[in-house]
Image (cartoon, rainbow, N blue to C red; front, side):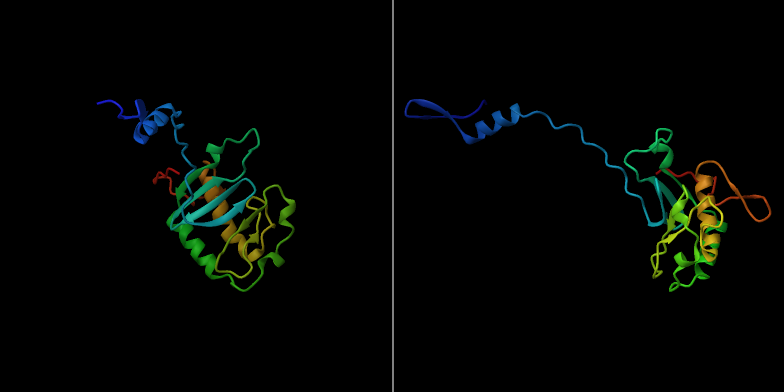
Length: 183
């Protein structure tokens, strides 16, 4: 059965339904839906210049934040995730528990914003968070934050296949190599 036409005064007139069908047929098809970037899971723990680190339990995820990255950086290289080792989780709990939530650790740090790797540690339950803390530079972070900073810096190095040495010059493994993760 084709479109329904009504006869009125000797003239064939299309119904509203017929008009709607014709308009729909002439519309251009919708473009393929764009996949939005997946939202990171968990709480943000590090805010860097070109990426952020989120933690959800023992899972950490590094995501790019710049719209235009330097030419030598691929956004896919910055979006990585992994699972913290038991040692890293214990160190994070231990070193966070040793911090005073009312103290302004920014007052104890040197000028971290002057370094190329300026970052901030976010501790939501702390009054003065976020705290300036360059991940790779030594002495930039407040002394009491430096161990917590070291654990996250080790995790980031592990996400990229590198490692930092611990106090015994052995590699500090913060990301479990046996637990694959896909951002």
